[in-house]
Amino acid sequence: ASFFLSYFQVSTGAYKRQVHEVPLGKQITDPALIEKITWATWTSILGDEVIGIWPRNADKADVNCACVTHAGLNIVTGDDFGLVKLFDFPCTEKFVSGFFFLI
Image 1 (cartoon, rainbow, N blue to C red):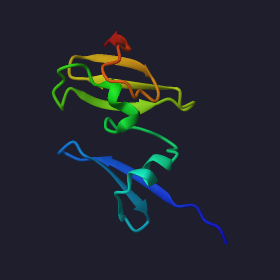
Image 2 (spheres, rainbow, N blue to C red; image 1 turned 135 degrees about the vertical axis):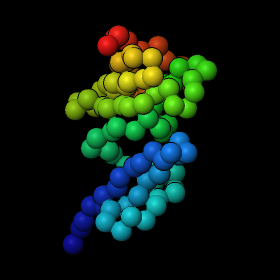
Image 3 (cartoon, one colour; image 1 turned 45 degrees about the vertical axis):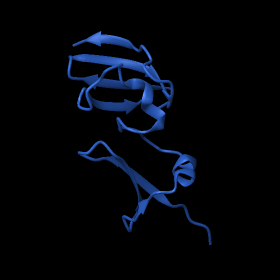
Image 4 (spheres, rainbow, N blue to C red; image 1 turned 90 degrees about the vertical axis):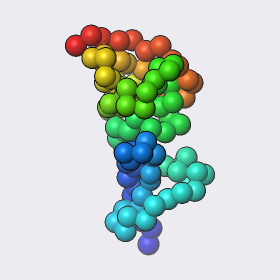
């Protein structure tokens, strides 16, 4: 019998990304395993896949939220400055200039 493992990721208050196995909640710490996971959705502001959403000289709390589009091609972020920004996903290069919208 084959089965699929499920995972979820969280961003902690200490700005650490944690990945856990479902349903036991066991934390996964092997970077090679984490890299192989295909996420059904993405709302995390942390991880190698979203390094580029952080502006140069950003405070840890500057980017508040993120969401990848259903097609998985773009990520939208919201920040402390009232900006909504659109980036390509994944966004793995540092300090990418996304398109931004003032709300």
